[in-house]
Structures are given as C-alpha cells and as structure tokens.
Image (tube, rainbow, N blue to C red; front, top):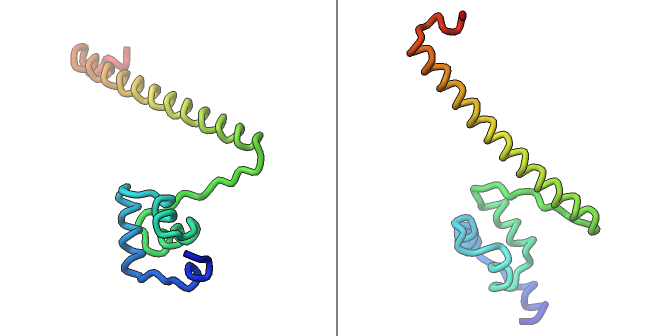
Length: 113
C-alpha cells in the first residue's frame, strides 16, 4: 500500500470503536493494531482517547540515556517504597489485632496500665 493510498483511507467509527474495545480488553496492543492496519500509533492513541473508557497514561519521552537511567532508578525506588508501606501496614494491622486480643483477655482497663 502506498503512502498516498494510506492518506486517503478512512476507518469507520464502528471499526475504531471495535479496535479500542480489543485494546482495552487486552486482546491486542496499540502497536499490533498499528502494524496490522498500517496506521500510526499516534492515530490509534487518538482513537483510545476519543472512544476509550480507560484513560491512557501519559507517555514518557526520554531524550538521553541519563534520563532513562534516572527514570529506571525512580521506578525501582517507587517499588521499594510501596513494598515498605505494605510491610508497615501489615505490622500496624498485626499490632492492632494484638491490642484487641489483649483487651479481651485482660479487660478494658488494659490500656490504662
């Protein structure tokens, strides 16, 4: 298919909605739709913005290797902090349950002692 033919081609609204549903269901990716129908990924993203129910995450544009490394490090740090928060939450729930158990066994005035 020539470039001129691709420029003149139009996809129906129904077709675009169908592709959006497939992408949102996880059956295909944006890149797969783009390659299969020879459409720019930017156009497929526009279909998702217009017809999709799920908001697309903002694209991260990396201009150099240092930025890429920094983003990777930030993602690792974010993951580590989320795990830490989860661990703290488990400990908090455990301590609250332990406190409730102590109240049951030792009486309500347990906290005053």
